[in-house]
Image 1: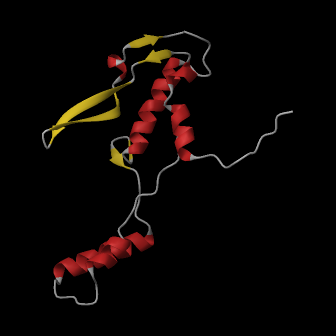
Image 2: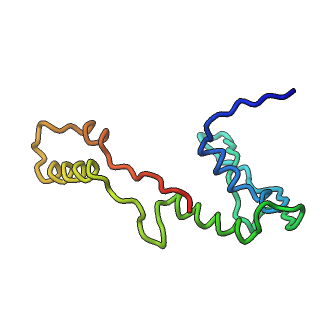
Image 3: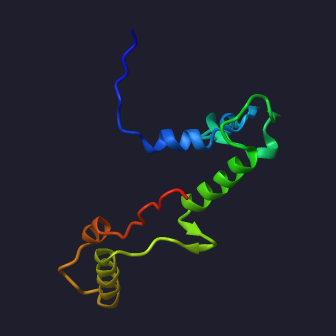
Length: 137
Protein backbone atom coordinates (compact mmCIF):
# COMPACT_ATOMS: atom_id res chain seq x y z
CA UNK A 1 0.00 0.00 0.00
CA UNK A 2 1.22 3.50 -0.82
CA UNK A 3 1.63 6.02 1.97
CA UNK A 4 1.84 9.78 1.65
CA UNK A 5 3.81 12.27 3.66
CA UNK A 6 2.04 15.62 3.68
CA UNK A 7 4.27 18.67 3.72
CA UNK A 8 3.44 22.39 3.70
CA UNK A 9 2.77 23.77 0.25
CA UNK A 10 5.60 25.77 -1.31
CA UNK A 11 5.03 29.04 -3.11
CA UNK A 12 6.98 27.93 -6.19
CA UNK A 13 4.84 24.79 -6.53
CA UNK A 14 1.61 26.81 -6.50
CA UNK A 15 2.99 29.29 -9.04
CA UNK A 16 4.22 26.40 -11.20
CA UNK A 17 0.70 24.99 -11.33
CA UNK A 18 -0.95 28.33 -12.00
CA UNK A 19 1.46 29.13 -14.85
CA UNK A 20 1.14 25.72 -16.51
CA UNK A 21 -1.31 25.81 -19.45
CA UNK A 22 -1.84 22.06 -19.08
CA UNK A 23 -4.42 22.79 -16.36
CA UNK A 24 -6.45 24.74 -18.92
CA UNK A 25 -6.56 21.73 -21.26
CA UNK A 26 -3.82 23.03 -23.56
CA UNK A 27 -0.84 21.08 -24.89
CA UNK A 28 2.19 23.33 -25.36
CA UNK A 29 5.71 22.76 -26.63
CA UNK A 30 8.48 25.33 -26.94
CA UNK A 31 7.55 27.72 -24.11
CA UNK A 32 11.17 28.63 -23.46
CA UNK A 33 14.32 29.17 -25.43
CA UNK A 34 18.07 28.97 -25.09
CA UNK A 35 20.19 32.08 -25.66
CA UNK A 36 23.83 32.29 -26.63
CA UNK A 37 26.07 35.28 -25.97
CA UNK A 38 29.77 35.85 -26.53
CA UNK A 39 31.44 36.60 -23.17
CA UNK A 40 35.21 37.09 -23.07
CA UNK A 41 35.50 35.53 -26.52
CA UNK A 42 33.60 32.37 -25.53
CA UNK A 43 30.05 31.28 -26.27
CA UNK A 44 27.90 31.22 -23.13
CA UNK A 45 24.51 29.53 -23.24
CA UNK A 46 21.65 30.21 -20.88
CA UNK A 47 18.44 28.25 -20.79
CA UNK A 48 14.84 28.66 -19.67
CA UNK A 49 14.07 32.08 -21.11
CA UNK A 50 10.28 32.15 -21.40
CA UNK A 51 8.61 33.11 -24.66
CA UNK A 52 5.34 35.04 -24.95
CA UNK A 53 2.24 32.94 -25.64
CA UNK A 54 2.16 33.82 -29.35
CA UNK A 55 5.74 32.60 -29.83
CA UNK A 56 5.23 29.08 -28.48
CA UNK A 57 6.17 26.49 -31.10
CA UNK A 58 3.15 24.23 -30.57
CA UNK A 59 -0.12 25.11 -28.84
CA UNK A 60 -3.13 22.81 -29.11
CA UNK A 61 -6.19 24.13 -27.32
CA UNK A 62 -8.79 21.65 -26.06
CA UNK A 63 -6.18 18.91 -26.25
CA UNK A 64 -7.74 17.37 -23.15
CA UNK A 65 -10.31 18.31 -20.56
CA UNK A 66 -8.89 21.11 -18.44
CA UNK A 67 -9.47 21.94 -14.81
CA UNK A 68 -10.06 25.58 -15.74
CA UNK A 69 -11.04 27.36 -18.97
CA UNK A 70 -8.48 29.10 -21.19
CA UNK A 71 -10.08 32.45 -20.35
CA UNK A 72 -9.63 31.77 -16.64
CA UNK A 73 -6.02 30.76 -17.28
CA UNK A 74 -5.39 34.07 -19.09
CA UNK A 75 -7.02 36.03 -16.24
CA UNK A 76 -4.78 34.18 -13.79
CA UNK A 77 -1.69 35.13 -15.83
CA UNK A 78 -2.70 38.79 -15.82
CA UNK A 79 -3.25 38.73 -12.06
CA UNK A 80 0.07 36.95 -11.48
CA UNK A 81 1.85 39.59 -13.57
CA UNK A 82 0.22 42.37 -11.55
CA UNK A 83 1.09 40.65 -8.27
CA UNK A 84 4.65 40.00 -9.43
CA UNK A 85 5.32 43.68 -9.95
CA UNK A 86 3.44 44.82 -6.84
CA UNK A 87 0.78 46.60 -8.84
CA UNK A 88 -2.98 46.35 -8.82
CA UNK A 89 -4.90 48.42 -11.35
CA UNK A 90 -1.70 50.19 -12.41
CA UNK A 91 -0.90 51.55 -8.94
CA UNK A 92 1.52 50.29 -6.35
CA UNK A 93 -0.40 47.91 -4.12
CA UNK A 94 1.86 47.50 -1.10
CA UNK A 95 1.80 49.89 1.81
CA UNK A 96 4.70 50.69 4.08
CA UNK A 97 4.28 49.29 7.55
CA UNK A 98 5.03 51.44 10.60
CA UNK A 99 8.58 50.09 10.98
CA UNK A 100 9.22 50.64 7.26
CA UNK A 101 7.92 54.21 7.53
CA UNK A 102 10.38 54.86 10.36
CA UNK A 103 13.17 53.45 8.19
CA UNK A 104 12.16 55.76 5.34
CA UNK A 105 12.23 58.71 7.75
CA UNK A 106 15.65 57.63 9.01
CA UNK A 107 16.97 57.45 5.45
CA UNK A 108 15.57 60.89 4.73
CA UNK A 109 17.18 62.34 7.87
CA UNK A 110 20.53 60.75 7.02
CA UNK A 111 20.42 62.06 3.46
CA UNK A 112 19.77 65.58 4.83
CA UNK A 113 22.58 65.32 7.35
CA UNK A 114 25.46 63.44 5.75
CA UNK A 115 27.56 63.88 8.90
CA UNK A 116 25.40 61.59 11.06
CA UNK A 117 28.01 59.25 12.56
CA UNK A 118 25.53 56.93 14.31
CA UNK A 119 23.93 55.39 11.18
CA UNK A 120 25.98 53.22 8.84
CA UNK A 121 25.05 52.14 5.32
CA UNK A 122 24.82 48.57 6.64
CA UNK A 123 22.15 49.70 9.13
CA UNK A 124 20.14 51.20 6.29
CA UNK A 125 20.54 48.11 4.10
CA UNK A 126 19.41 45.82 6.93
CA UNK A 127 16.24 47.84 7.44
CA UNK A 128 15.38 48.55 3.82
CA UNK A 129 11.59 48.62 3.33
CA UNK A 130 10.29 45.50 1.65
CA UNK A 131 6.91 45.06 0.03
CA UNK A 132 5.11 42.04 1.38
CA UNK A 133 3.58 39.93 -1.37
CA UNK A 134 -0.14 40.34 -1.73
CA UNK A 135 -2.28 37.24 -1.86
CA UNK A 136 -3.37 35.97 -5.24
CA UNK A 137 -6.83 37.24 -6.12
